[in-house]
Length: 245
Image (cartoon, rainbow, N blue to C red; front, top):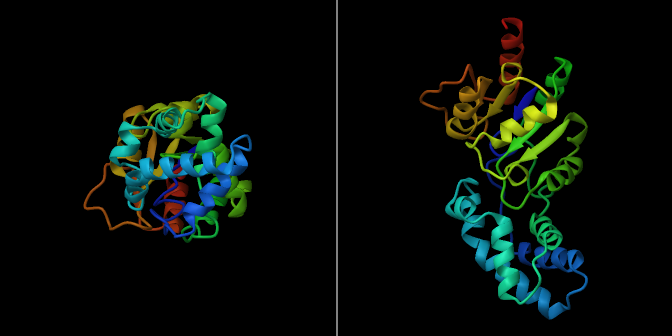
């Protein structure tokens, strides 16, 4: 099984925030919460956007920011609903979180070689599991993204930090993937661009690792079993790894 990171691995580390994002989120909130009138949607939306803005700004670089670490999205949403005098049931929180996860297909493209890497993993008889740190996005949101990007057919499962309840480098995302696949650690290879979030926790669990940096500077050093500058080189490193396993 290949556990593959997303930001900086399959698609860019960041995508542009646009002036229309606010209106887009308001429209998605209105569709997700049809029981609320326009004024309530506007007030809730402004609260959500203002409360999460430091996280959005930091996510232009990385999901590892103070907001995502100390205030998970569900907690932030619950606090906003409470301030607005609205019920904060689990279903409502989930709908709001998905509404806040704007689609990315019209603002960025997969990194070069991403589809080919996923296809090569399948050709080698392995399964592709997306294993990603996120803020708003859960697995269902990611499935929508990958369908619109034409990549969903190459993916077998998606597990995010939202679904696992912890951000990488916590092992929860990797352990959830192993449970889904019923696969031992030594049959898994983690492919990602972050030493601290992808490589180190995977090595601690006894997994194989490939560090890729298609959207990052060349690392000075890595503990990974292989290091690849792009996703085509990553596919070759995976083939070589399996040949010598």
